[in-house]
Image (cartoon, rainbow, N blue to C red; front, side, top):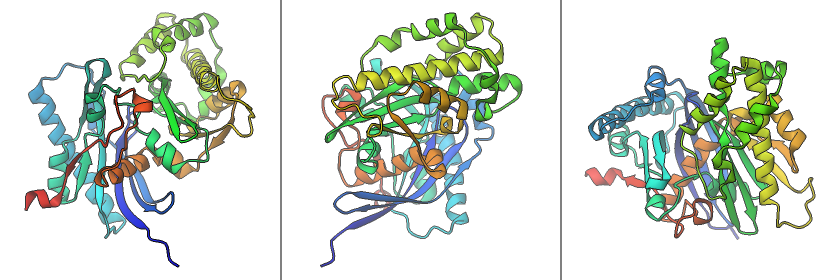
Length: 367
């Protein structure tokens, strides 16, 4: 007897805080007893002149933000339409767009991701799901991280999922629930110092490997107030500036700054793992596996430092998953939203309840 199942085809868009490009992933999701997925095709598009615009720190007016959001939506539409044409995509149920975070202030219940969903839907003539964080914040949550719903339902075999992006964040499964939070800035800081050597990033961590760890500076970094806060918790991109200030104030060389900050990331990840495992019995390292993804997973020096300290076994995701896991999960969040199912979890964000987040712009809305 054939089992009933549903298949969805969705594009996920993610522009991360490390500003290394716009990730686009075309994925299929099949709902049977559990969710099955496949990344059918994916690529990273250059942000072009947007990279400089998105990197600027300024207080935009409401009118400026609305204008930027619509203009960025036009950029997104152009990239997605080019992607659709290139890969000859003829079946598409929705586009789920995270947009690019301009600011994120959970203590004020305010967040802003550029990329106007209505405009994107109009330009693409596709159903679009966007504004994926605000509803959770309306329920008193942090609005972040939102990827753990994917960790829970798409990667059930891993106790931990660790994303090493602009910001490092972690999720931890307990039976049928999950905890997650932001750990510390990662590639945002590492890439900042790599640029001082005219490099987009420190490939393989080779510059960091040549440096020496400053224990004094490491202690300063580890003493930042954020690390004493119990989760749920999330970071605004501006937190990276605190770490950069400490490293520069101490006049470390580029190599020493990279080595010291890599050690900081490894230390904070291990502290998070220890805290999450505190009440877990039978702490068998072979069973406590961490799935690693995000651009930092290609930084072999950083992975070595994490592995040296880790209480759990590190497992590198496939190259495709390392690059596009967040875009994959954005697509999945969009699928759950059009199904009316919870896609942001209170156990992760600290909200009063789970929620089905995202504004939906259906094609029929314009008929």
